Image 1 (cartoon, rainbow, N blue to C red):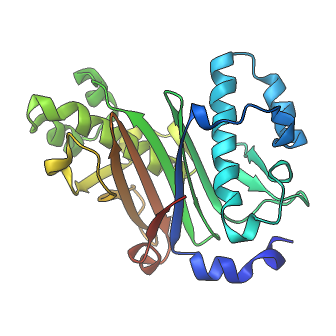
Image 2: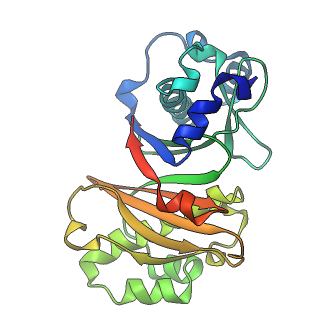
Length: 255
């Protein structure tokens, strides 16, 4: 069904990454049954802890709102679009006919905020992460960063280390999501290389800046990453494609 819904839409926008950042105040106050599907309502009923329920609801609302803003999904009611998790934990958008959409979706939560990124079609796989800037201990950096990443952090003045260590960690999280392995992998199996735009933007919000990232088996896979600061938070998105041109032409579009 999905191929009949928006083949031209996927073809025309396959090199775009759509994203949105939503805070808790934007979560609708009406009953969740008005915008959640039946499978989602079953999942919600299984969540025991209020904080987890709120995060889950905010992520679903952000993901559905983002999808509904795109041409291929506007004809569907929000309750007809479901966000389900695969066995590896990665989220996927499901169509009313019970089929998964080929588009790639990534969701991240932090402190009553949700970041969602989505790209049409299967050509580009993405991961997104949202992190609050906070101190990362020396032991944390030693345990989770590669030697090159540790050297980068150690070379910085003390006032910059929290921002850069949070940025590296976030980019790793995004990369592992794009690989659909999450934290089941040792985080030192992926590495963040060059980071653009660190100065003078360590202490202010700005636009998307570039990252270079990689994994231990790069043959046939191309990588690109982006980061942006929003107040005390960092957002990262990492993309993986078999065609380098898919990444070179990517445009990040806020919704």
